[in-house]
Length: 165
Image (cartoon, rainbow, N blue to C red; front, side, top):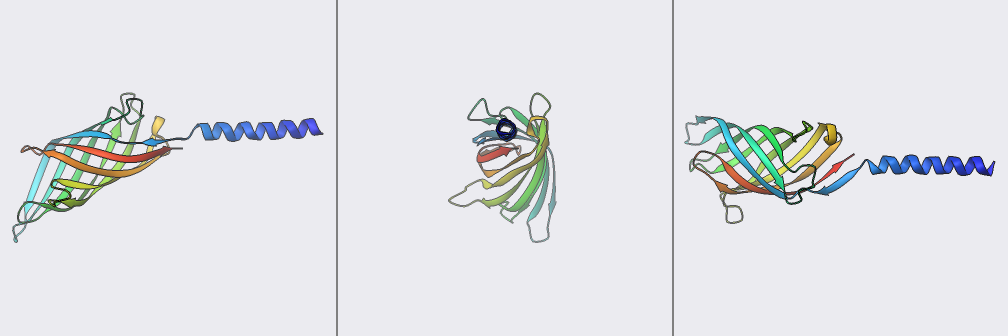
């Protein structure tokens, strides 16, 4: 009886351990680049504008062993612009893959732009869902555009955390 109980407890501990081993958590700090694929602008009567953009984004993490390192995304987003062409609101979504074809989806939204704290654009992001090594992913963080080019391309930094269950 004691032997059976010991084996049962040992089996349960192993089952819990293997379930826990499948979880992964970490930092998502790194740099990204965005290249505009297409852009449509609608001007409003008050001089503002709505910019709808599709773009490619590449992400390099500070840690080369991070599962999100060397991912590439296809994205669509919309920015609402003031009369002075400063973004005042915006958001979008992306589908990202790694070199093995494993992928996940993420969203972003603009929090601040054209201010002393954020001269370009700053905001929040998060990921959800996924397949392959990204199955069960959830993450969130912030981004800052550090360089914005005349062709609409951008370079930025990102910080956050992730969990893959």
